[in-house]
Image (tube, rainbow, N blue to C red):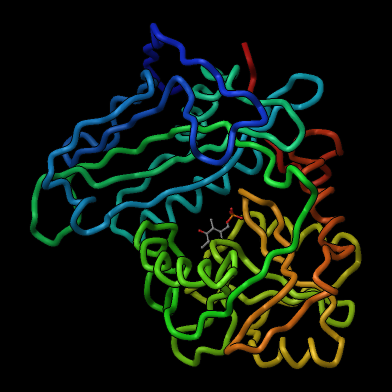
Length: 358
Ligand SMILES: *Cc1c(COP(=O)(O)O)cnc(C)c1O
C-alpha cells in the first residue's frame, strides 16, 4: 500500500557538524515528519516539513499529564554507500505497545516505516559515515488537546526527528561504574515501566544525579517491592555471565523490552551459549562475584549497543567485575552487532532494512 506523504523541502539547509563533534542528540537534520490525529479524522496529514519549533496550546495534555511515548533507533551508512535501519518494525510494534498503555491510538506501523524511510531519504546527507557514527532516530507521540480534564486526549501528533550521533566509544569500549539504587525505583509491576514513556525518565533523574555526584555513571535499578530483584541499568537492559551461562532479568511487566536485548539473546544462543531469562537478585550477583563465578556484566541499548559494567556499589559494598575490564563476550557482542548494523558483517538474522536512495 502506498501512503500519501507530502514533502516540503527547506530553502535553508543547515551546515553539518564535523564527524568528531557530533555528540549525542545535539544536532538535528533539516527535516522532520509529522502526522496528526483527531478523534474525527483518525491519523491524517502525513507530511515531511523543514525541522523547526512547533506551536502548542499551553493547556496541551502532554504538558500536564505526561501522555506521551517515544522510540529510539538508528540508520547506518554502509561502507559501500547503502543506508540501513536496524529492526525498525520492532520499534513501531513497541511504539504501539507503549501507545496502548498510555491510551494513545495505534499508529499504522507500515505508514510509520514508510514515513521513516522517506525522511531518511530526504536527509540522507546527514547520515555520518565515520566509524562508530550513525543517525539516531527519535519517533514520538504527544497529546495535544487543550483541556485540563484527566482523560485521554482527543488530539495527538506523531513525529519523527533525527540527529547525527558520534562514536559512543571514541577511545574503545570502557567499562562503567554503576550505583545500585536502594531508595528510588524506576517502575513497578502494573505501572508504566514496560512503556517508553517520559515519566519513567523524569522520575529517574534524581537518583541518576545523586549517583553521578558520587562518581557513578549509571544506576542499577532494583524492583519496587523487595528492592532485591535486578531490573535494568540506566536506560539499558542488563546481562550477567555466570559460570559460562548468560543470565538476564525476565521481562516481568516493569522492565522495558529492549530490541538490543532481544538481538543479544539471539546472538549469544547462536554461539551455543545458554541464555537464561529469570528473576535475578542483587544478593546472588554479589555472591557470584565473591566466589568468582561472575565473569561479566553488561548493559544493552540502541545508543551504546553494549556497556560493560566494571564495578557495582550496593549499600557501600563495592564489587569489581572482570578486573574492571571489558570481557570477551561483551567485546564479541559489540563487534558482531555493530558489524551487522553498519554492514561490515553478514546479517543472517535478517535484521537490517535497506532504505532505497532514489
Ligand atoms: C529504550 C530502553 C532500553 C533499550 O531498548 P533498545 O530497544 O535496546 O534500545 C532499555 N531500557 C529502557 C528503560 C529504555 O528506555
